Image 1: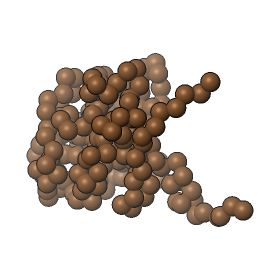
Image 2 (image 1 turned 180 degrees about the vertical axis):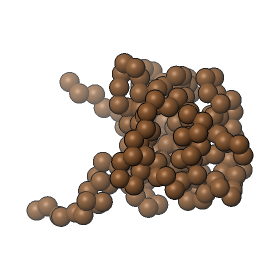
Image 3 (image 1 turned 180 degrees about the horizontal axis):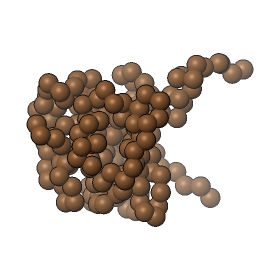
Image 4 (image 1 turned 30 degrees about the horizontal axis):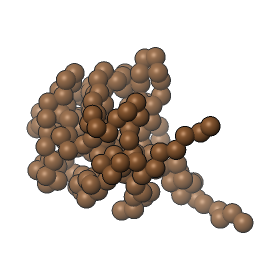
Length: 182
């Protein structure tokens, strides 16, 4: 037997991709936003999409700067990831509050988060209003990953490579197995 879900509950069935920390920079400095809604959208050119509510502080930072960094945290950063998703950068320094370290990126002004295991540097390609969110599509212009956690794929089967996946509220799943199809 199947249980009926509301449309919002149904979205949660696919809302467990890796939770990311997106950094953007404005006049007051860098900020971090925790996001669960992200996806690759093109190979040529390499594009990805993130979804951000216009009410979020980082929304206008991304729109005005035209760039951002997708930082991939591992499971050891659960509390920092959750904190960055529950306080606003309008009146708090999330780097300081979460004890995270901004370091220079190679291709964009937005910083990388040193403690994260992977980074995708992005320049805004297009954006669209979709309901109560803005979908930012960005071209990937650079990236980096902890060398010991990458063999052509992210090694989520190593403890240090376990990614967080937001299930809703303060509930997350942790990736920990890699499997291959025949």
